[in-house]
Every structure is written in C-alpha cells, then in structure tokens.
Length: 261
Image (cartoon, rainbow, N blue to C red):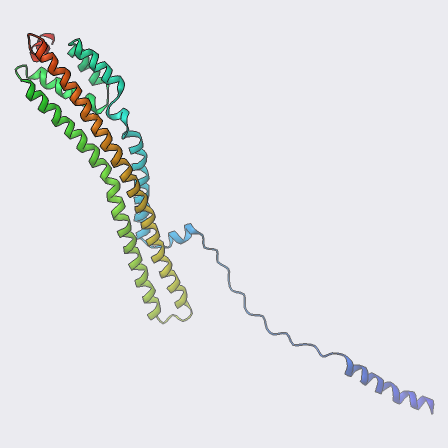
C-alpha cells in the first residue's frame, strides 16, 4: 500500500516543481548596429566642393604675400640711416662720383632716387636745378606708387575670398534642395546634410581668409604710408644739399660732374 502511495506522490511533486520554475524571458531582437564614420575637419573640407580649392589657393597666396611684405616693406628697404649719412657726407664734399657708386651698390628706394638724379645730371650738364627737382619728385612718386600698389593685393584677396565663399554657399544650398526633391529614400537626409555642410564650410573658409587679409592690408598700408613720408623727407634733404652746392660753387653741379667723368 505504501509503495502505491509513493508512486502516486512522486509525479505530483515533480509536476509542482516544474510549475514553480520561471519561464524563460523573451529578449527583444537587437537593432542592427549602424556603421560608425569618423569625419575629420580636413576630410570635410576636401568634400566641400571645387570652390574650396580656389579658397585654399588664395589662402596660400595671402600667407606668402604677408611674409614678403614683412621682409620688404620696412624702413631699411626704403630709407636707411647708413646711406643717408654717407650721402650727406659725399654731397658736402661734392664727391658726386662716389655718391653715384654708393647708390649703385645700395638697394634702398632713396638710393634709386639719388641714382636717377645723378644719372640725369651727368647726361644733361646744362639742366637747371628745377629740372633736377622734377626728376627726383617723379622717381619718388614712382616708388611710392609701387609701395601702395603692392599692398593692394591683400585688399583684393580680402574682397574676393568672401565672395567665393558665398558662391560655394549657394552651390551647397542648391545641392541640398536637389536632395530634398530627389527620390533616393533614406539617402535623402545624408545628401541634405552634405549640402548644408558644404555651404557652411565655404562660408567659413571665405571669411577666415578675407578677414585676416583685410587686417594685414590695413597694417601694411599704414606702414607704407609712414615709409613714403620718410622717403619724401629724405628726398627733400638730398635736394636741399644739392641746392646748396649749386648756389655755393662758382660752377654748376652738372659741369662738375661732366669734368669728373
């Protein structure tokens, strides 16, 4: 009797244990992992369209111009104390040949003016002092115009770069609207973001090139104006010394130069 009782109890207890074990929880399917793309600034600039290439070339040119202007638009390249002291001493001694030789060796702007004056005087021994003054003023004006014209290249870049950036912006916006109207499915938003990114990069690049170019233009324009004023003062000093030599000597300076040659 006990054996039948245990045989009946064992299946019942097993069924109760199976009923107490928790059922496995169904896990939701994992979403497909999207590919990760790392976009650097250089890569984004390279994808910003053909206008970015032109802006890059303008940036290189502007940097080169700034370096050249720092080396050339300075006081030592226009008027130097050494040349002025030498010219003053030689003019007081009436050593015009020595001054002409010194002017040929120097590369300052005032040296070119003195060289032109002495060349005209030696080739035209009958010229009066007013003609010599006119030659000096003409050469000084030419040097001043050369300084001003060189600086204007930065101003041109400062005006052209933002306009090119605006052109790249318009091209990017056109591509964005083209992506909105295209039937490309999920790729539409990617093309839209690419067009907007291209537009913004071109705008930023144009401003980033144009603003420093205009700043350096204002800086070098002020420096060139100061150097032109110093050049005018140096030319006036040279002409004053020549005028004294004309008035002091019994013979005129062209005749002296002709006899020395």
